[in-house]
Image (cartoon, rainbow, N blue to C red):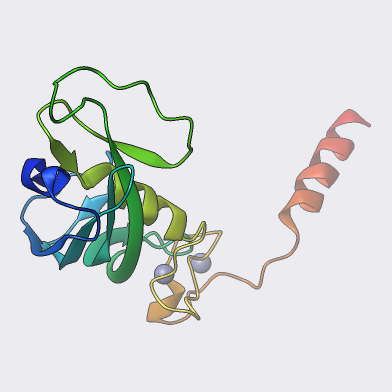
Length: 174
Ligand SMILES: [Zn+2]
Ligand SMILES: [Zn+2]
């Protein structure tokens, strides 16, 4: 997701251009599997110190259910708005002092911006700690591992195992 913004940086403040985002084989993070292309729309606007880039992407992730460990796909719609500041002066080619502002991405010394990192951060921020294949996922039987979404298993209702183990230990010691 790399865009050359040399022309835009030379343009007056307020100039903007839009781009369709359509990326195949996006690799965001080693723990994140993206299914299919990432599609969206971006708009880049020349502002005083650099560029303001906003838009949205739709991304389809393959996630693992926290309860039943099944893999499932989840579509995420992610609006984003980020600032990109140049690292070199477009006219002189001289390096610019690093910005003191936070949450700013660099425009590299070839006048390229890469949306990948911005989108990666958005995805990680939006991704819930607990990912469920369905809201009422029944999970796995803690005794035999049977997927309880497919129906009950033959295990006895769970007596608290911790206590029975404790009992066994106590009896052994006596
Ligand atoms: Zn599940
Ligand atoms: Zn069971």
